[in-house]
Image 1: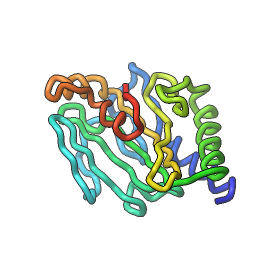
Image 2: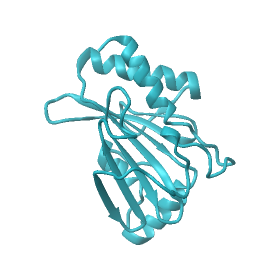
Image 3: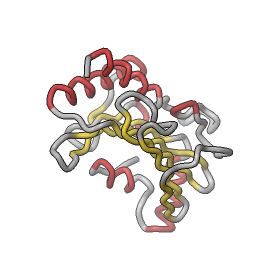
Image 4: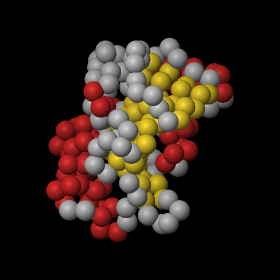
Length: 184
């Protein structure tokens, strides 16, 4: 894949991570033109997982909202009381120079939009200001890696508290399962 393609993918990925400050409303735009908060209508997913107050909707490559370059899957996490509060983007498996270029392009676009990220909970992860966006990678069976970017809505903390009360673990534990670390 050429560097220009990585730049396009980076812009698409980072565009989905519009970060909300605590003072911003729940109606703020979420990734893919969605809004944080109550969900009126979403495309029919290919898979649905439910646990306590969380419903995860899975969209594979080619199905909106998983239509961008380099996209393998998108997961929308809807909380019972807070509505849409998490969007997870999973990239196509890459290795070597392709993985490094894709990660660098995403990093550069994140810095351009949000400033310098902090080191995330894993050695290869980054967290942008406010902890509302995380970039990490995960290894797949053939040794390649998938980049994983997740954006959290302004009501995610309340959703996570409710989830912990019902299940004994925070909602961020599901991100931890996905990338191998704890979420916010």
